[in-house]
Image 1 (spheres, rainbow, N blue to C red):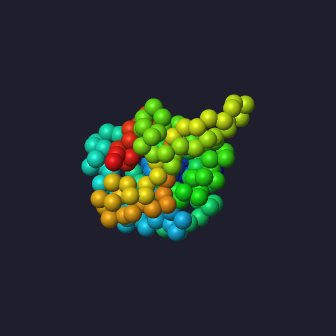
Image 2 (image 1 turned 90 degrees about the vertical axis):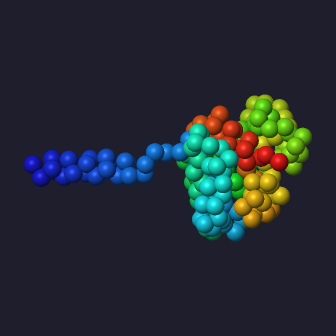
Image 3 (image 1 turned 135 degrees about the vertical axis):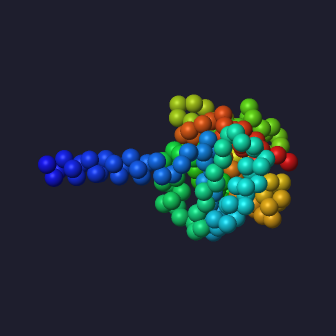
Length: 175
């Protein structure tokens, strides 16, 4: 009898905890620079981005205050983020694993030549596509008082809502 009550209590707690986070955003953005990224800065950028995107799709920016390779790997593997904003060297090292979504159909590659890279997918010949948006001098970041130097925004292949992620990245990439 005690085991049965314990099980009921555990299930009740699990149900309560899963409901605590509120609705999930359509596009979650993970941001971490080579020295981390403060949460206050992320909040400021999130507010600005929400005003540019509008009510739909919903957007949430999550930041890491310190650089952590392990955290980055977990965030990439978990598959819950639609957009990543990482240091350029991390973007380049990840390009060897061919885990990016091509942005050619959303953003003009000639507008971001530094984001055009050649990736060889398994079993296919290497092709050049726009995979990342370099944020050095980016309008959205500059409007909020940030340089964006050395940061690149990209969409991972395991993005939960690909079309919404492309829509938000297009807003981020506006010149």
